[in-house]
Image (cartoon, rainbow, N blue to C red; front, side, top):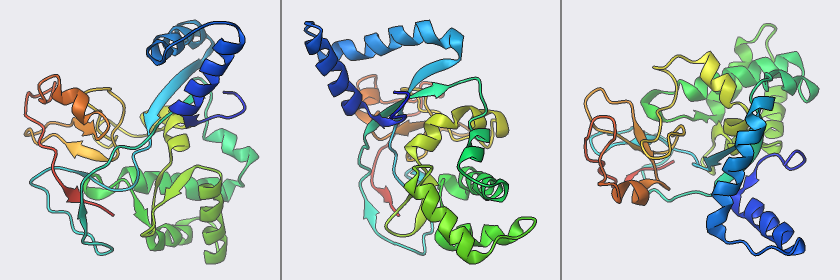
Length: 249
């Protein structure tokens, strides 16, 4: 995990099974979660934890009553669950400062502005268009050239810090959500942070928003069926989740 950082849960599961077979143990898939949670109990005191998050894709958190405007695409599609990812996360160090080994100070400044704009995007979109992302470079001191900002965006996608949709929208990647989770918690107040999933308690950046008045909870697509088995209601306000088709971009 120290070498691979973030990877799909299925990849870690396969590695775990292969190691168990090599050591002469027989294990089942159901034993994997208790196994890594037990590891967490031993490493959390040292400032590490194994974290898990869904690859949520690009798009808004929608509810049935919202009518989101989208100039890039008017297609309506059913939300589809993404893959679950895991990574070993350092909970004590400033992961954003570690970018200094990969990026210059002005590049880190632009990346921080990108993260801010994505988190603070209206209507729970949690994404930024390519055009708006490049325009942010002019707000730096000193400003960054357009060609340099385009190159940086490509580097951030290649290194796995940002994800780019086919329609040209940037969002926080799985790696970014996992490794910068403490940064997101410490630098945004409760009102600005992405809502929590009523089922797994992780942040939701793509899925279904609770329609309860004033309720800040949401639901991952991948958690929909699990929550339905609990009755399908929000654990915070008891409103029924209505998971229908939503605008996709």
